[in-house]
Image 1 (cartoon, rainbow, N blue to C red):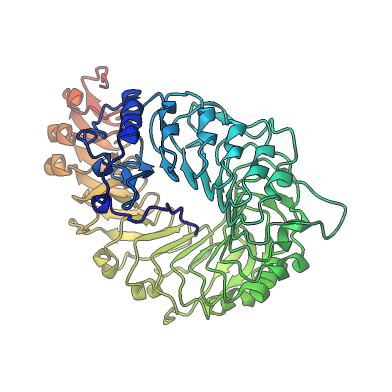
Image 2 (image 1 turned 180 degrees about the vertical axis):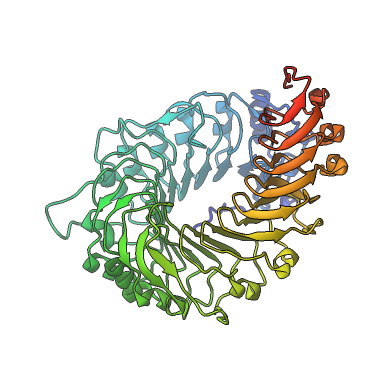
Length: 566
């Protein structure tokens, strides 16, 4: 991945002590600070005579010129509240080559035109900074830019930045990294690929969530595509509603290709895949691709069997049998096959997947047409972290091969036809996500569950489990509904301080609802419906400030009064 670098002689602010700060540049920085609102005090160090020692400022240690301003607070994943106005006093920083104002809160102001006037600027990052309006074409004047990130932020952001045309990109011939993700390109008046095609040095291109509906096709089977260096292409979360154009597969340097949620349809011809010999990640999930699974996987196994590390094909219209060539991807780490496959998936499909860490295989409940069949004594060649198998016929016995997976963090075996007890070794795994719902599991649960993770989900609903309500102290989301649990709710349930969601509906629980339940301060959802609970309904729900849903119906409770949620 391209990493933007400044021309400063030191990457450590503490080393920029040679000449000290230039007086005029210090004044420019103070004027810039004056226009900003800084509720978290991020700029509190901007005092004293030597601005080269200020937080987020780097200087050339020979001349003292400010070459870098990096105000991103990497201690927070979101904005720290710094915003306000961006003063054009920054133009006095003639040697500035790196400017990072990402993850700030500029409350919908436009990106200033003058940011395109820095002659030496190589790195500009304004992503996730709550800008609005139109991206100024003046940025195309910063002809030395190598890195430009204007990602508008998360898709649900109420503020939107837009672009009417991309012709200004032609002024950035050295650009290596371009991210316009979540910027609105729906009104872009030219074909978006044409200006991008004028960036021969481009290594990474991110146009995710840009409301693009045009995926241009050309009558010439070999159109001139000048993206001869492109390694990462992200066009996900758009609305192309078309097939993939042939020119896309002529970009032989591609390493990572993200096209998920793109309304892409139709076939992917076998021949088109042969040029992608460097492909490491291919994400085609959540589309309408209707290729035969054998053709698609065989094509990838020939071109990319040694390079491919991540393959996401889930939620398409892929069908047919999975070919044996699936087992030939020597370096595959993540595999998502959630489609309507048929036939049998067996050990041969995993024979060389020694690096597999994440595996997903699921269908809709009404399309169980593939069996997952391996020998009881099978030892997989991989040691996975996450296993997700849903709505497939696995085995009436609990899969013993899972015992060999020593790094497991997540197990999903939903509706896979298991009719067995849950083995004791499973409870000794330190996992944070366990979904064994909609099977025919029976037997009792251990009363104590020891896990180190701070947030754990357990879903054992829709089985035939019996015994008492367990006390699992580190579980955050607990789903035990539609089983045969009986007896009282433990009086000590208030000690489950991590619990946020509790569903034990449709069981045989009896007795009272313990008043200690009001001590679970993070509880947001509680469903005790359709049991045999009796007695008074506790009145101290107001202590549960996170609570927004409660269902106590179909019990034998009395003094039914309105439960006022906080």
